[in-house]
Amino acid sequence: MNGATVIRNARHWRTGERLDLAFDRGVILASPLREASRVIDARGLTLAPGLVDLHVHLREPGQASKETIERGTRAAAAGGFTAVACMPNSEPVLDSPAWIEWVRARAEAAGWCRVHPIGAVTVGQKGEQLTEFSSLKSAGAAALSDDGRPIMSAAVMRHALEYARPTGLPIICHEEDASLKGDGVMHEGFTATRLGLRGIPGAAESVLCRRDADLSELTGGRVHLAHLSASASFDALRDAKRRGLAVTGETCPHYWVLTDEAVGDYDTHAKMNPPLRSEADRDACIAAIVDGTIDCFSTDHAPHTADEKARPFTDAPFGIVGLETALALTLTHLVAPGHLTLARALERWTEAPRRAFRLPEVSLAPGSPADLVVFDPVAEWTVDPDAFFSKGRNTPFAGWRLRGRVLATMLAGRFTHVAGGVEFAAASEATGASR
Ligand SMILES: [Zn+2]
Image (cartoon, rainbow, N blue to C red):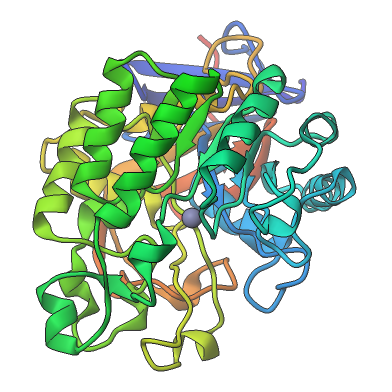
């Protein structure tokens, strides 16, 4: 008897072939062992490398009423994630090595998920003075961003890209021209007019996408365009790739699932930034996913308290939670309608984000860390925000029927999430465990 665990009869996430996989001491083994201490029968279930979310707000330090590192990373595990990158717009801002180390230490103590903190580009995210990029990197920062707000000065962005270049870190751009946004609270269009709310045009995003692609060309620095929502922004990213620039981009499930009509009657759970846009933008989002313009997916998990979201629409904060619905929204709204194969959809949550941020590779190959997810690709469930592990309940998908359910998540071989339907058996009881 040894300490190994074997997952039997799973379906390989890429090939669809039947797969037995064993791991021990956190690492995937070369072949399923004859004697394992634990066997999981994964018949009918898909086995994939753990998902990665490059865009998460864990809200600590300073905003624990919205979310904590403990709860946010537990939610990540429930969503099938084994790694997240967290944004620095906490209080205080993650603009020093000490705060990067603090987040890493807290995440490690919680133990639910690997956390790659993102350092601020400018001190206090004020858009002026650059932080110490190389010390942030040494402390463990995986990327740099002033996310939550745009860097409005092109000169500051230019210098940031020049200064970041030798570190190899990408700058994640929250693209939102402040003068075009004004005091807009939702997408500029018919619904905003009907509700008498101020609108934010898609161009508020796309003009900065174009600017930062040009600045990447000028400096050679790496640009990662965050949470793209507008048709013209997808065009800007497509164009940047055609020019061979070091520009990557992500979009989030709500942009391929919803439009501004979800705001309905001032529903603050449909208030996010960038805003839900038109049907044409949603179509362009799906087209950009299908043709490979969009590198990877992210959730922009942005928890807020119920009190904050209960405010009038114009005063409520922007943002929704996303970690616990991401995979199901992908399977239900991209894979089931035939826009993407399961393998291509999962690539955007696994290999592609790791490539974009140059995170350590994770695969099912022997020697890889056993960062894994087992899910039922067709099981249906109903979204119940009260059952979320996240402190945030702010989702527009409450009550939605979705397909695809995470049943087990493993981080370095440790189970960080197990849901009903997965049965563990001692090897001795599982007849036929050895082959
Ligand atoms: Zn943002």
